[in-house]
Image 1 (cartoon, rainbow over the protein chains, first blue to last red):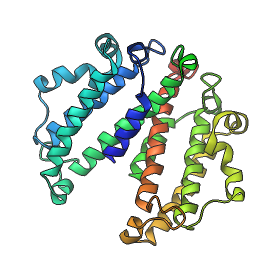
Image 2: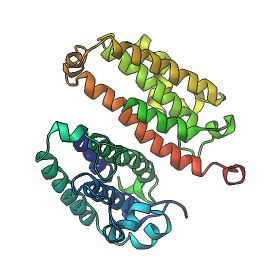
Image 3: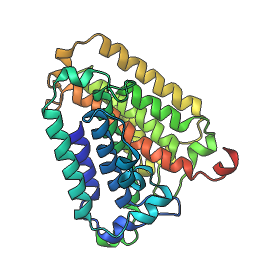
Image 4: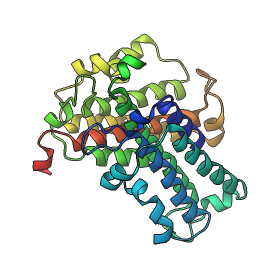
Length: 153
Length: 153
């Protein structure tokens, strides 16, 4: 599920320029770049909860906060990067996830998380995929409305 | 996953009026109502492929087509209904899915579909949830921009 969701995300942003990634459809929109940063931040956050088995601290969250929360801080801070930068971050986060999952078994996956026993690891990682899929739906919508896209594609 | 995705979808449309459901954000947008009809149509299509074990015929697809394909036919045909109508359709489709799944076991779920051996039933139903999640992401975005919403909510 994680791999399939990621494939869809990468396809949705293929070929976008820095201007495309920074574009704000309206004053309340998140840019596509910010939504990519969000996917990485969500994955990093759930790595701490599920693999490190602890709640993220303020220090853990500080570098992720604009991307986790999006909105105004996201619009201010998450801009000016090329696609390759976002993709490198996504790919590094995913490499760490898959390496950590490979060390664990199905029993671990089904047990409640020590740090957040209201969920188990299976749900946590389904939710990471789910969040990514839901934002990919938004990226598709936003991409179709990028200024000048109809001329370029 | 199906239940969780559906819960998110229902939450996203809670309290919308007929005008909200019919609203087109721009000339290329699907209305929220059309996206709800799409979720039902996708579920009906995958019921035929996975439970009836055959490819949907043109006769099967005819009543679903505007909702499956969206775009211009969807904008023309899928309008004028109250929320309860869309929700009834969703709920009837889901009732049929859960009844059919209850008759089948995990081996069935993992076997390639007879009608479309490139996928198994597990993937097919993951994909139904995935499609719903991705459109729910769009519904969230569209709902925030409904005319007059900021005054009403």
